[in-house]
Structure formats: C-alpha cells, structure tokens
Figure 1 (cartoon, rainbow, N blue to C red):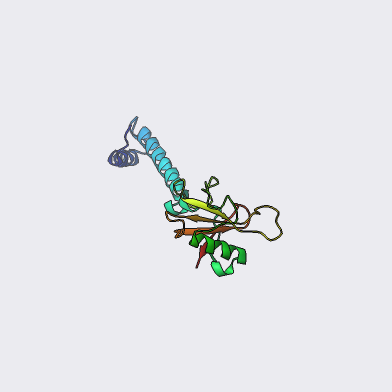
Figure 2 (figure 1 turned 90 degrees about the horizontal axis):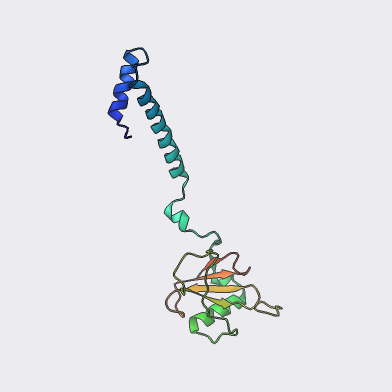
Length: 158
C-alpha cells in the first residue's frame, strides 16, 4: 500500500470536521500515517548513527602519526634499508603483509610488505616491524610502525 500525503491530510481534515471519526476511511489512514511517521523516524535515526564513508574506512588499529626521527634508531636504520633496497638482515624482510586484522587502510593483496625492526636483547625477530605499502618497494606510498606485533600502527611521517 502506498501512502499518499494528500490522502492523509484529506482524511485528517475530514476526521476533524466530523468530530474525530469519518467511518472506515479516516481511521485506517490515520493509523497508516502514524505507522509511516514511525518508520520514517526509525530509518532517520539509524541513518544518523551509521558511520560516514570516511569513518567506515578508518582502521581501528591506526594511532597517531609519528615522525621518523622519534622512532628508535633500529627503526630509522630499517627505514634506510627499505628506501635503498636492502640488504636486509632477516630472510622474512620484504614479504607480503596480509593486513588480515584490517588495522591498516584496505589495499589490494600484495600492496603491503613487512620489515623487521631489530629489538635489542631479543633472541628472535621481536615484535617491532615497519610495514610499507605501494607499487615501488624503495619508494613506498606510506609506511607504518608497530612495536606490538601488529596490534597497533602509527603512520611514519618525515
């Protein structure tokens, strides 16, 4: 059933003139009008609560930007190796980073590559990484630092 605003107004006016009821016509139209108003209110409320397109794209694990100079010396050295093409100290450096937790901005598979940031005293690769994305490995579009093994990231700015 399609509710026409003119019919609702006409039926409300008729109901007012005739003391509140005009038989079978006014009562259903008023009921449908109220239902329409309720549905419209609910739809508007949900639309207002929905994230905007830019909010929806913002990953949950992305923290504040950090300057390269504020990162540990090991991270600065890893950044230099990335931009010069290596050689890298770990065999896993440069492998594709899948972004499975979706904490970085969504990009096609193969966009991101991970590099180890050595952790002093660690007997393995440790938890620190730099993840870079882009088409040119030595000229990445963006790089991100994580010190907690992919739980959170900070975009590196120069």
